[in-house]
Image (cartoon, rainbow over all chains, first blue to last red):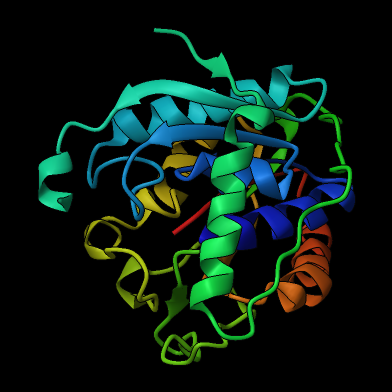
Length: 91
Length: 169
């Protein structure tokens, strides 16, 4: 439900004239909620920008979001190619 | 590897299954989606833009009322998180995700330090003086859509924000 809450607020902020982008960890909910821009990451809930104390990883994801802001000309959801290396601890 | 553009139709059945799951498991459920959606092109280069962050990970400050997580009703309110927040005062009120990563490093859900570094590098113009903390568990999103969304939009507009980056819990 976090994704729907985020998506609805994102939509309202975009409608107010602010350009927005979001991270999606559950792409079907983000896509279904109909947002202007989002990037799907195959990361676990609670880690939308990656692992703790990994600034390079956080910056990689933020840069992808910024490029999406710069390049999208219509509502666009992309999937980023990164994979989570430590799924084990979440199982 | 490259990024790929997703087709909403490929996820339609999965989305409808989720909507049904929420309806079957949460009293007072409802569903809302964005009409359109609205689309606002960047009005200025990012190097000149003021950027805000928003999270639904239950982020609030120790002197702010925690989000209500114990009830099935959810909590559609939001908290203003100052850009110059002392990280030791940040709390996480959410029962539907593992908060351990966020507790170790706030940047995992609200990358305030990273945003400051982007400003320092000149990649974005400025950090918004305020960011937004929400708690995403809302079986009925009517208040989120009708009240919280417009209120967050007004707060960010008042803060002179050009760009907002959102992340789920």
